Image 1 (cartoon, rainbow, N blue to C red):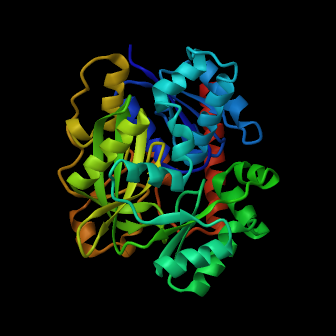
Image 2: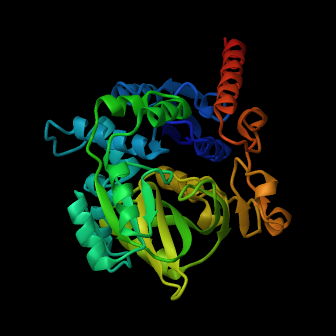
Length: 414
């Protein structure tokens, strides 16, 4: 029996569609808990869809788990991972020594529950990595501006300020002066302006941002040593603390400042590989995990800067036996050998989908890169594949086209 995979997606990121397609290519039964505006609702790779409801997220995810009866649950974003951690805590409040049902499923899918609190806090994670002998930037929590001033006095600028529970570069500021640091701290530590809140509600296609607004949490801001170098990342499939497969890449171009990668170059880096093995073993992780690094220009040393306890945007790539994350996880679930799939490309440079406009890419990239895109989902490509400037008009048009496509799909299914 091929495993059943349940994807949990709380926003409108498109990378889960590629993950669904890779699992479907391995003949898995792919299902999803997601928002109604998520592209997973249109994807032909997803057999069943369940509503993610931001005002009662644990109940909606729990309902999806009960209906799907999955072998593996995969968080596709940071909020989804946080929900699954909270769901595990709820399921184990009775103090049972042997996790059952959903709790056992979440241990199989995510690994040791000890990791939950650590991966959710940037500073605690970096402290643990440092204990394992992994090279990380100097950093400290800065609960107020006085603490920030003291840290800058001792460590200097430029520096990087970060907040927990953010992704896509939203909670990161690179500051070059003390005055910039103070302004960035006020921005990161204060409630978000109403205009930005409204934009986030529109863009993520759900009420998750609004739900956070009415249940506010004090942001934790930390200051980090700035490392001048090249961004890099490693996407992993792991099982009970052991790395099964990995994809390491240098980031050549991002979609926005400090944001997710748009163009990558595949690399091999022993420092990064050894670092992630140590952290995965220490935390007892299972499932998909992503690690962010900076490779210092002057020394070539790889500094670990962040963990993403979820599937990341390169997790779907099928790049040969040691770099096919989905196949490796399926093999662990079934206890059989991993499916042998040829690499989708021999090229080292990959333009991730949805592609940036060619006018934004260097000519060498356009001529020599592999342009990754959905192969068996032409409707997804038609609706979501083009790269456009993010404007209110474009967003509304995309939502309208997606709603029409879902309506047509539901009519054909009925």
